[in-house]
Length: 282
Image (tube, rainbow, N blue to C red; front, side):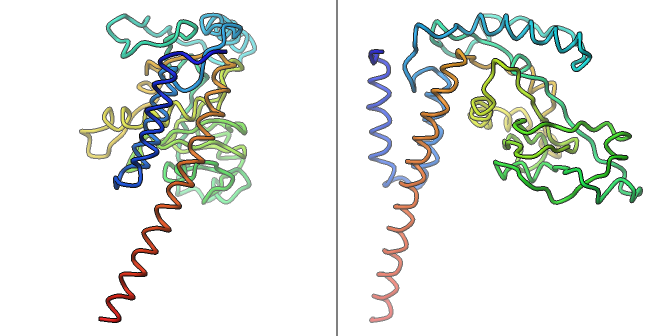
């Protein structure tokens, strides 16, 4: 695969940001945003003509949806509106397609069992609140519920690998990945991805959309978005093979950002130490 002109420009742009990140207070966060933005525009990794195009993925996803409906594992829902040309925010590669987040998996929010019923709590089933989603990888919870609560309180047990997004409060738009089976409260939406979607790619995509979700949730006494707003969100869909390449590239670049951030922190601490020593001498 050859590197296109746009990809060469992307490399130069990233190099420029890595070079200047030391000098700007918000350099590293902005660099992280840039990486995700380029990734979701198809400019971070090259396209491979041998990849199964995303339009075929969408056909396979519809087949999978119908199978799950027939198996009574998924409820049939009204089709969402078709995406119109004026809704498309930018150009994407030919092998990609525009889709709605509803096409990535099935999305469920949870509930809070009544606090007045002690038989609902302190069981062996993990129960996640929105503030815990910001942990990223979720392997434990502050509270647990019982099997009785699971059966009687409009709750679902989300499988390992499900992607969570916080819908209410200060951490609206934060994203987590389940490393355990768990339920959630009503302030968290969980997605179990279809087989043609890489769940880690979905997590990166949602992170790139955080500011969009924050803007959607503004204006209320408590900032919030809804499951309906999430599943209607228009997003780019790459081929499955490219989804995996994008994830790999993002993780490499984010690790470099971590290393750069650590160097800046160490440099700042060293400067502070030298300044304190100078003040002490004075």
